[in-house]
Length: 330
Image (cartoon, rainbow, N blue to C red; front, side):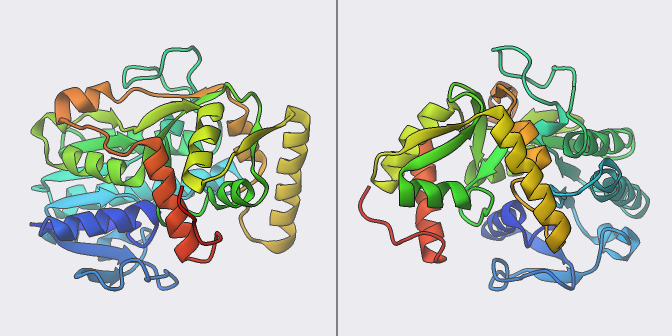
């Protein structure tokens, strides 16, 4: 069995490539000429140097699965998000349908952002009407629709993770560092705001289950590990780091100002910033929550990573990379 993974040198994609190799799946990974290969360099994979801009050059006709993980999370304009996430997805699935009509599965890794924040206390499920925020979320929903347009020609499945954390992620580094050094966790908005998180190991398990299950053909699945308030996250982070962590609440006006400063830095340096206007806007939403009951019911998915253990393993990885001080016993 053979699988093509896009985004395999990134955070989620590299973990997925590792899982496929452990399962004995011959794994082909699309890499760009500028990709950093340290997370896949020792894996027994075939590397194809190319681009999603030219999917016809990929060995789409020679694989059983296409696992499309690649995506862009930091862009300046809605048009740039659409080009990077929706248009490339449309080209890829068009090429897959043309080159491999017998493909076993095309899995698109989308995002909870494609649905948008939860408008009520009830976590969103797959039946919820999508109301994505402009930019990233709208582009991921457009990518989903491009994939579903081919469901009469190919067996397709969509996986929607919420915020993903774990080893190799860099988005939460500053939060861990601030918590370890100063004992504070900056929170935008209310500490009672709720969000669903998924550990990368649980997400990869969900993707692999969805890729193989016949019941998943034509379906969409939310995959999560747990839903927490920021207060609960601060407590768990303190346990993982072995010190007390207090919440530092950032008023919305100050948070928006920080986001604008991030935009200015982005303009001056040309480097995408983690803290930017979109991230602050997203963080101000009261609820980014979802239910993964459908995945449990139809795929047999069961999250295995508790919040404290997941945060501890992430912190230990940051320490090995020199991003945190060496851990003491939590």
